[in-house]
Image (cartoon, rainbow, N blue to C red):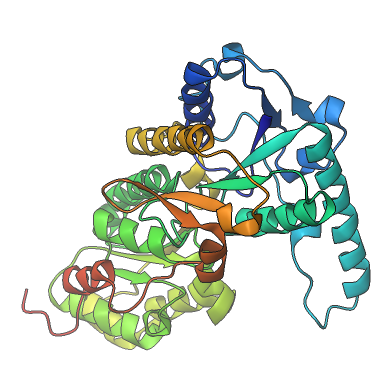
Length: 379
């Protein structure tokens, strides 16, 4: 039977390496096995097969994709796969649209004779895959079918894996932005509020702040880190010790939870704080900058390409060593990494326990508290 593969959700550097790793590892052992590429994520899965799929692909389809950012297959998000809230005014219409989408996707998978669907994406993509798999099995109970997830998101917030594809590249891009902006803020003795990606989780903001030597970091999981009064106390302490500049790294999810004006309000308070003005002799100049989607662009890092290649090859190994069955969702899994080796985690567990958030007792959060500005530090 054929194997389908798609990339879904936000693009992540290294997605191409995962597709390539899977394809080469599979074809090495079963060169005649058909692989189907779906274009533009789940849109291609439920689209017209002649225009949304590449069938019987050969190695020329993956030539020179290893070092390209983004995903050569295309990606996207499908609103029909997002469960509508119970109080949504258009809930019934959205549920009907979801069923229509799932029906088309299941029929397409059946017609293509696909037994395994590899989904390269994040938490939302895996939840969508579960819906599709359940509908397929209900509709065609006699046909073997399985989903294999490969975690790819710059947020690094998927349960069951220490690292996700794309995180290392985004981390390096963000740290590079911190380093570049440091040159100008040090020259002018300014403050910078640097907004970085991370709507639900603060891993990217936190680790880039530690690696980039930021003064303060604010992440959505820990409300105490948003507190303007505490940030001002830290900055005053830094001025007393003749710090020349201040970089405040904030994850975008803080603005979602604490208010869209969070950064502007902090800038206003920093520029108008009487104690800061008294110590400096003049108001501090503060700027707001955003790394934004630049973080997920460019060539994937060596670590992301290596990780993605390992994930892709492991997916091929699982398919060749353990064929899909009609056993239901118990066989669906995600390929992760525990810090030492690739592992398989039940997909139900992954979707139930994601996103993986930063906790106050996390080692990296505790490290940040030791290394960043603190009130009363003696140096």
